[in-house]
Length: 315
Image 1 (cartoon, helix red, strand yellow):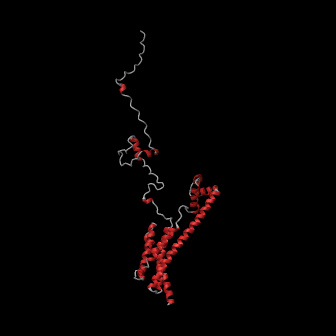
Image 2 (cartoon, rainbow, N blue to C red):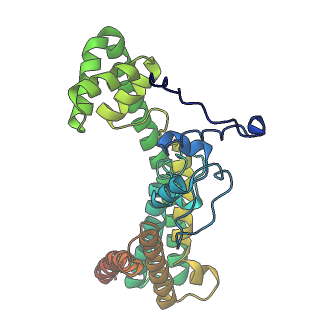
Image 3 (cartoon, one colour):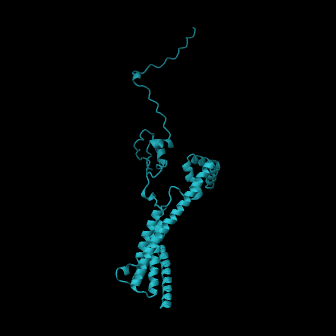
């Protein structure tokens, strides 16, 4: 008998209702947690155990991705530019307006000057009304002298600074290339690479006013937009000197003339003023107060001795 022809394999019979069960969808690839995704999702705080609940907005991530995110450090805070999100601790005090130096100088000068005048007159055995007149004359003359000196000195300084800034402006207009090279050298001196320093200098030089301000700060050491005010310095000096000079004069003005009380008030004012300035500068207040007290005591003691010597000669 001839052999039977081979039988071709038959496909398996279709399962009933196969069309009602579509194949399961292929899950999309899990996105990688990169730094570019930080702005669009909230990174969870570091959990204390592995089964911490997911944060809102991250439910679409797989458990493996969530576990990876929990091990990553949190994103950096939003950069703080131009005063945004600044806390009070980030704020700085105004130390460039010209008032601080004038006020400290005026107050200390006032108390030391008048305490010394009173000590000298007392050493010369002057009458109480003479001591009072001497103290008042020292107060008025010293206050106006300090205010006038501060106004003239700050005004002169600003005029010289303005002249130098104008000279720098003219130099920028005449030799922009050389000024650009100078600015690049300044940045290289601060640690920038030559290529980067030249690029920074070129970008800053695109704006003439900005370039002038940078050259003034780097070459002259001044900010042309933040110069001290002569009126502020004069007012601060006048007021501070008046308060300081009035302190040792109070017992004589109140009708209870006492050299000891005058010295005590002057000593307390000098120590307190020195301690206050030291604390403002984040230094120990006691050392700052003692420094001012000792210097004031030296001046007062020397004036008292001079008064005694002159009074003895005159008498």
